[in-house]
Image (cartoon, rainbow, N blue to C red; front, side, top):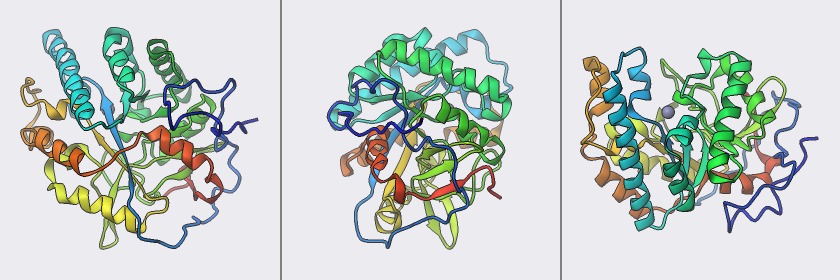
Length: 341
Ligand SMILES: [Zn+2]
């Protein structure tokens, strides 16, 4: 079991193609030796492939707003703004002829199926960003499995196509929640993109590989596409997107892309953004000053920055990389997330 390859699936040309019946990526195999050292090949000069991704959630679902009592009118406002800002993104991507991966909260497939359909019809990959944007820490394994199923089913019902990628809310797959990797593999996900190899108070797996690797849970492994970091003086700086895109100068992201091209194997970087980050007209959440600065600083310049980024680079969908790496799985390093220190 677990040995069906992605090979033969005409994904490079048509990302919307059906997965073969009984599809299981062959890296979703039982964990063999999760302690085996990474088999990096010698670095060579090349340009990195850049996965462009968006996490599709309403603004009031952000971690900084957890515990806030948000009135229904404001919630409705953010639902509306999510629609507007996501459609703005779709137009921007179309203008630059770029296809991306959209990790969508499953509940959105229920209350705004037209938006999910629009993402899919524009040729982007629709992947899962959980059912209700609850952090994995707050779920039992059984609840997490149900959450993944609900979101996968809801999104698939709208697009009619398999959902094969997952990103946890607030990058909440960490050492303590490594069991979630087993469940993702068992539920038919081809890859995960939840691990941020940084030290942070809310998320992060500091020692994890910075390039794609096989992430081992307790029973299975799954292809991991970690969020981009910049290595400086022995530290991993989070430069993959979100707040860092708004707060750091753009050259940090550019440097990250160049560094990955020079020294990552495979040379792949994952960037991530949220629609609300491109929407300076939305109403502000009643956050405390520190969260307020983190959340809204730089929000007026993000549209221009994104346009610059999109005009300078070529981008790919996560599933395209997953398919290609399926042929190279033997050379990918395995890394035991459950045993991380
Ligand atoms: Zn999110």
